[in-house]
Image 1 (cartoon, one colour):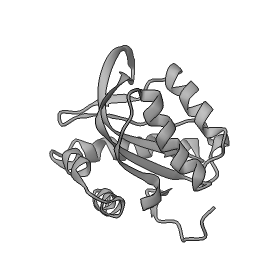
Image 2 (cartoon, helix red, strand yellow):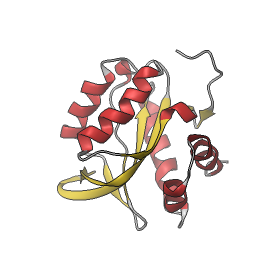
Image 3 (spheres, rainbow, N blue to C red):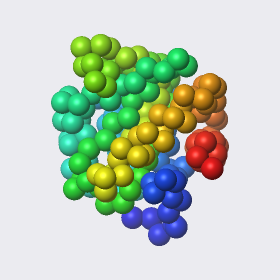
Image 4 (cartoon, rainbow, N blue to C red):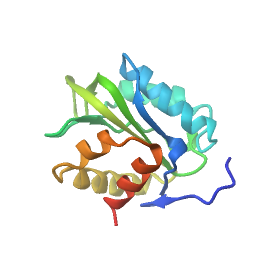
Length: 161
């Protein structure tokens, strides 16, 4: 794990190395795999995180349609996480996820917000904060348009100040 001081946002560590811009993926699974690998490489999640998050996505879909674009919020159980963290990916082109709560409804996703949660009791609070923030017009579009991982972290953080 990096010795850098965690940059905690709502209790979650977010760093430029947890960000993938313009990610090329043809499927939801490929997008999840690429972003999860960043978190595995940083050792904030365990190697078991990837198969666990893919399995959970099959059972509990995480696509969410907002007016600006579709997003996905993949996450899994705390035993696969070393430290609370969030990974963010903007996709080159939308990929199809299934919608949260209505798995028979496809959702074209342009951004992923992958959560590494260590305390399941904080999960709902974090998700509510995230969803409330993304209801503000222009925020998702602004995140999608950033040109550096550092700017992604800076802009994302500014939504929760």
